[in-house]
Length: 221
Ligand SMILES: [Mn+2]
Image (cartoon, rainbow, N blue to C red; front, side, top):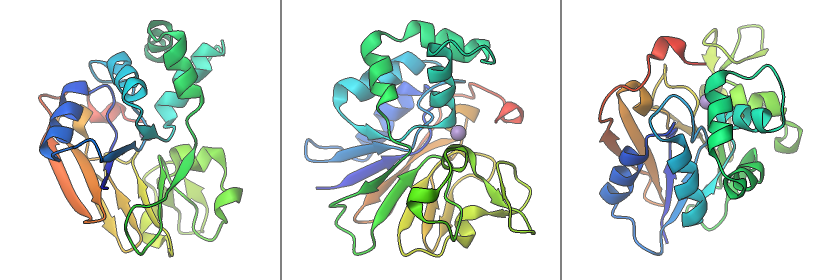
């Protein structure tokens, strides 16, 4: 069995299908999504529905979480997240609600254990004590050691000491990241760049080009 870990899709359903085809996905392959299935791109609802109906695994991303906040009637929600919440059906919403903040890839066929999370993990903090805010939004560790959701320090993944290898997304500005114990898969498909998968156990990276830019990267958050 192979595991295909797919980077931030953001509604790019056509590119998702193209990527899985390029991976030569077969019935024994497991697919795991690093979160941010929705927002900014052309078919957020289609991606969630495909993921649910296909029975693939995923972790929650910050944009997926914003949609759930809209579902729960919170008022500081952007119109684009509210529109997605209104377009999803009850089964889609239940599927999103059930997504974990991180997951451990059992039986990935690698000697190194693998974890999947959308944003990141603060080095030196036990997995079960990581804060939701960081699991969804972390990008950097500042010079003073504090975690940050911005690009104002060292990528957290460069400081992650293992022993688990962490596969993550959420950092399209830095793009593909390959560190000793972490791999960042957000290669900016929705911004017109690429959608990337990490294939385990071979650790091969497979990419497809975006069909076009669906959003401007300046607005990324
Ligand atoms: Mn994100």
